[in-house]
Amino acid sequence: MLHQPLQTPLFILLFLFSAALSSCNGPAESKAATSQPTPVQAQTRPTASIPEEALPTIEARDSAIFERYKEKATREQWQKKPISEIITLTGDFFLGTPYVGQTLERDYTKALKEGTNVKERLIINLHEMDCMTFMENILALARTVRLGDISLDAYCRQLCLIRYRQGRIDGYASRLHYTSDWIRDNESLGIARDITLQIGGIPREKKRDWMSNHPQLYDALRMDPSLIKDIRKEEERLSQTPFNYIPRNRIDSTVLSGIQDGDMITFTAEGSGIDYAHVGFAHLGEDGILHFKHCSLTIKHALTDKRSIPGYMSNKKHFDGMAVFRATDPLSGN
Image 1 (cartoon, rainbow, N blue to C red):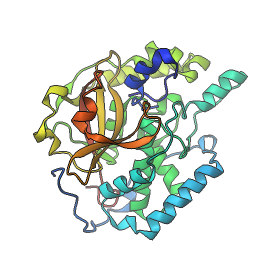
Image 2: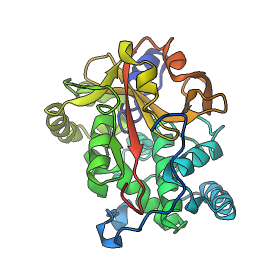
Image 3: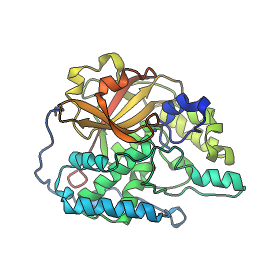
Image 4: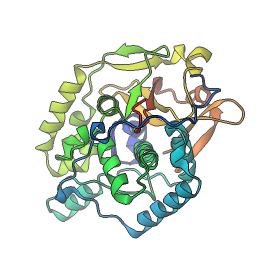
C-alpha cells in the first residue's frame, strides 16, 4: 500500500490499491493476559532520529486532541493493560475521524504550487487521517502509553520510528511508502511481527514499482523528478524479497482463529506493481466475531465495520488476500 496518490475520480480505484503503500501484525476469542512483563533494558529499545529541519509543526487542534487522549488514557490507567488492548482502546478513541488523503504530501503540494523547495519532515495530524496514518498513529500512541511517558515528544518519536526506515528521516525515500517495506522494517526494530505464515499464509513474489511508474500521482515526485531515482532504488531492493499473504480462498475459520483483537490487518492487491491495498485492525466484537476497524475512503471516516472480516472482503474484488501482523510489547519485547 502507498501513502497519498492523487484523489481524482479517475484514480479512486487506483487509490484503493495504493493507499496502504506507505505514504489508505491465540485465538480470536481470548484476550492477552494482563500480567505485567519484566521491563527490558531501555538501551535495547529502538530510537528515532529527527533532524532539526524535520521536526514537526503541531497545530493547536492536534495538540488538543492529544491532550484529550492523554487525559483519558491516564485516568483509565491504560498503561497497565496489554499493548493489544491499548491499541483497541486507542482505535475506539479515534472512531469518526474524517478520512483525508495526501496528508503527508501537503508540504510538497504547497511547494509545487509556490515553486519553492521543501524537505521531508515529520507530519503530525490527529484530526484527519487515511488508512495508513490511522494505523501508524494508533500504534505510536499505544506504544507511548505502554511505555509510561505520554508526552507529545515521546509520541512524535514513536511515530517517526514507525513511519521512517530505521526511525531516521533522511529525505522522501526514507519514508516507508510500501507496506511490505513498513512491515519488514518495523519487524526488524521489534515493533511488530508478521504472523501471516504462522496462521496459514504463504510467501509471494511480486515486483513493486508503482510509485516510479506513476510519478504523476505524487506531488513530491512531480516537484522533484530526481526523487524518482531514489524511490526506484528502494523498489528494486524491496522487490528482491517476497512478502507474505493468505490467499483469499484460504481465509477460513482456522485462519481467523489465529487472529487476535488489536492485530493489524492488511489486504493484498491484485494490481501490478503494488503489494497491499488497505490496512486497519482486527476488532473482536461482543458478538464474538472479528470485525475490521479502519479509516475508510468510501465511508469517509474511521469506523468498525459491522461485517466480519470475510464479509468486509466479499465486495472488495481487488483484494486477493490478506496479511496479519501483531504489535509487540515495548516493555518486554514479546
